[in-house]
Length: 201
Image 1 (tube, rainbow, N blue to C red):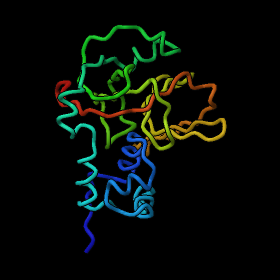
Image 2: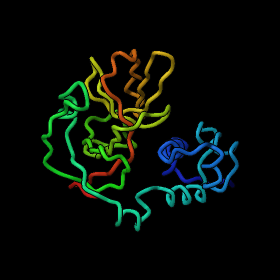
Image 3: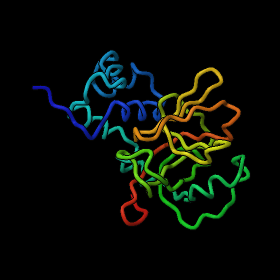
């Protein structure tokens, strides 16, 4: 009988690989599996085994306690409304009231408090997405984007030709498909911090 760990998905593996900026070959080596098996996992053709899930958790940035203790710094938190107040990143108002610690390598990093249910059951209202304004997103990564008509959204990013597609985990929310010109800014997510009662890691 083949066992799996439902708490870790192929999308989780893909997100971490892009965050670590690894090729499939290199990331597969880190997980102790073949590149072809990783490809099938990322596409959802196979379930993630407990052994692979355990290795995945070891590779997560938040699990490197020494790195966090030496490199973690407070970054400012803003609401979705604050994030959508400026068309360009440089125009965003400095209205933050709180901070959260992170080891995100982007010097411009800030956190956004997530609204809505479009990314449930994986991410929930009140969770904090740590953003990397100095980086460009890769296909399949989580992003927060400001769009002309929809405002600020938290989605899964995909881009092809002149078209951007932003999808949700919640199937009741249809994908948002827009022209590149409708995207004022789009920042990849370094990590999502679960907010239970208060803002803590």
